[in-house]
Amino acid sequence: MPSLNVARVLSSLALLVVLGSAWAQPASSASEPVPPASAELTSASSPAAAVIPAAPVVVNAPVAPAAPVVVPPAPLTRPGLVAQSTINGADTAWMLTATALVLLMTLPGIALFYGGMVRKKSVINTMACTVAIAAVVSILWFTVGYSLAFTPGGPWIGGTDRLFFDGIDYLKDAGKVSVSHLAPTIPESVFAMFQLTFAIITPALIVGAFVERMKFSAMVWFISLWSVLVYAPVAHWVWEPSGWLAQMGALDFAGGSVVHINAGVAGLVCAYFLGPRRGYGREAFEPFNLGLTMSGTGLLWVGWFGFNAGSALTADGRTGLAMLTTHVAAAAGALSWMGAEWLVRRRPSLLGLCSGVVAGLVAITPAAGYVTPAAALAIGLIAGISCYWGATGLKRLLRADDSLDVFGVHGVGGIVGALLTGLLASPTISGAQGSILTQAVAALAVLAYSGLVSALLLLVIQQVIGLRVEDSDEITGMDLTQHRERIGT
Image 1 (spheres, rainbow, N blue to C red):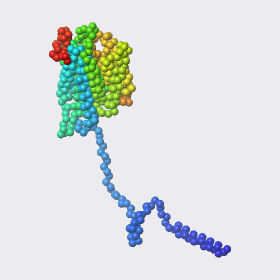
Image 2 (cartoon, one colour):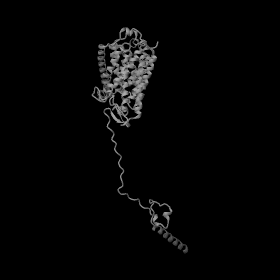
Image 3 (cartoon, rainbow, N blue to C red):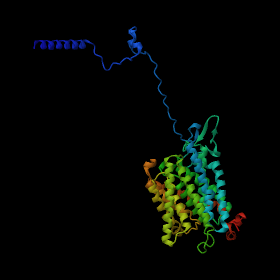
Image 4 (spheres, rainbow, N blue to C red):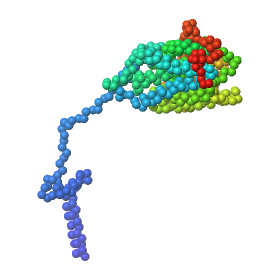
């Protein structure tokens, strides 16, 4: 059918024309912006409005200044003034609390702990010794002790920059406050006060070795001289970076050597110089009130959180770890002493439990900020057994009337803790690497120095005013003969 073929040809030609027209138009890019459908751009009377102008090119645009480079101040190497703004409020609040806790350990902790264990006729004297030591040592720390212990000097003793607390300032208008190089985030006044509480409790521990027979006047002279000539130098050796034991790398987080070994050996020397109490080994020396002793133990346990956790000198994760290890070791010490006593004597005692708590606390003191909780458990268990032997078997071997087992608990516990610190210290906690050899050298050095100087001081006092009360005064009781007072009725 020719007409049909013609129609097909015409249709094909029309399709080609349409396609060719479309091909001749400029293609629109999908990447080009589509102008908005506004009246201005679509108006036939304003064709120029449909053109989108290019962004202007800015020549010589100002360049933003670079952030200033903040250079941190060089770390302090000695006490000095800093801006008040550098003080950390959390650290300061915690250290104020820790300071109060450690002072609570002596007043009334030690007074109750020791007062409950002596005989009724010597309770007042024991407590009076504790209060007098707190007062005397505080003034000596203010005048000379702090400066000799905690300012840079030689390897053996500190300097004189802080005699009479000179330089411990707070300058409100200038916005300045003094800090120690050992605790730069808290005021130096807080640091000095915190360390004072350690200087108080250390000689107060010695009292337990000579109770019921030492003249009160002789005690005041001995403790005064010992605080300056023994405690301050040993604290400098261990805790001030220029001290020779610190330079050696000895680890003593809160006072295993400075406090416990130091006081323990001084107490043993006092016991030898004074001789045994009248009737020792032949008479039963009944404690006045073990309820007081238990109360003192509770105050010591709680106060020891300030003692050990406070020695971190900040409020951080290590502080929390030190508190945890302290508690674990105290509990472990109580249980292991109780177990040893139960095995040997067939019954546990309240006095044994209290002594075990203190043994665990003593032994963890040098290690608290260096070891894990599992290591603290081991230290407490070992300390409880070791100190039980120190207060029984070792005491018989030494043949000294160490009245309240100052060396048996504090001396032995301090030595055990120092050595175990060298063995169990974890570098991941503090970065410190422990060494049993270094710890042994430090413990022996403190034993030798404290023992020798204590003996020399006692020898001099013996020649000048005498050490021991008269036999008749001892029989009557220290409370009446030394203070004209008595406890209760």
